[in-house]
Image (cartoon, rainbow, N blue to C red):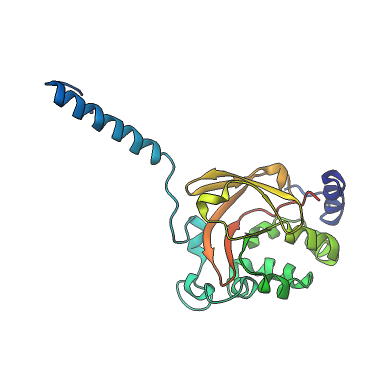
Length: 218
């Protein structure tokens, strides 16, 4: 289906959605200084974007529990939907996955990357619009699978264009610890989607929590 048709159907389902040193001295000294200068320049370039961490990072990670099943450690032991179900900030996403009967599918697929909209992303929908989307199983399935990318993407692999489980593409921009998806690729089509908590590990997925719901393009 063409993007324009898909967005048209989606907008119908979700109503009219309104709603990121100096050099001196001898030749040897000059050579040493030049080498040091080169090293400093290289180091500065490498640090221009904060390097990605092996641990979850992002301001939104503060909302994740520090212990129990909903903590980062706890989530690492469970498949992705189960882990999300133990995370209050992802309750609306879990509700949508349940409505589309995708719980077993997403829990059983090995090695995926999930762009997981946090609750405020769903709360931005006008009254009744989310319920309409939840009732449209084919469109809801397209929306949800558009947020899933085969393979686990580490932060240094996240930027780029990726094929989703919906057999369309999502383009993620950024580097280091700053990633976003353009506003026109979101359902609301007004504000870019930012990754607010990145590199969250579950038993079968790497999760990037985002602050907007994305729109499928196929």
